[in-house]
Figure 1 (tube, rainbow, N blue to C red):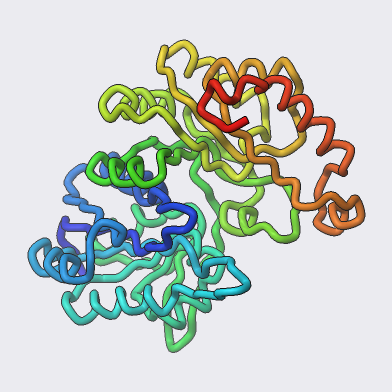
Figure 2: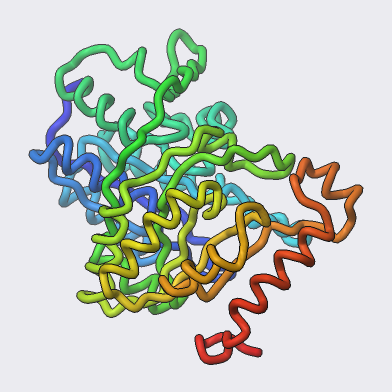
Length: 343
């Protein structure tokens, strides 16, 4: 089945707790496809900004030949409520099937954790797990040319009543960084922050974490110049001055991070930023450089104040490390009230 140039990318996530999360993955996918296939006409529809009636209208009027639907959250991770979202996602994809003849491609973090189970539930034409940009690009070329799609990295599809999950052999090492201007204002207004990813992959082995499943363990750092360009654009054009770096762990390699933060300092933009940090690779000197670039918010993955439990979790640190590094960070950020944080 050959396709036209109209491609619709859909953020299906509507989970608002603790705040709506900007769909950064779709933004990166949009930029990648525009750069690789400039003839495409691509739109994003976000279910945090539009309802089902509006979605049906865009399906009818835009008439996309391919709809990529991103599943971010599978459930609310709340053991008391235990809300799951796949049923809602199926409702969205069923609407696509009813109101258009579009080819449906499922992507996103949630799909990447459970590709077979979700494919069986949703029954799209295709799914892509892991780094989706390159595979989506190759899939569109194959569909446009009417050639085989069966060897595409990370592709999930059905053949002879069997679900095929292709091995992912390659991961992208360089991506353009992009924030969709038509929707970023909503997330800034609702959460007071916007997320940007500076690297993918996590080398750690924490038993509870899905990042090594989703992004694999090999770390790929995005071009720091592209990150700073995106930060400068939203800072000057949108007056957005708080960024959360959504990397699995920000301080995996300090050489990469110091290059990035020095470029932020040199750019002159006065942003504040936060990130997930491990207790590794942190000392007073490094924290001082991070602070100079705008760091105001550190989230440590401590998880427990029991050495036995930390070992069970396959953590690389123990309680003494938690206390030591937290004290170092506390001294470097003792003026946090002036930076907008409570004492």
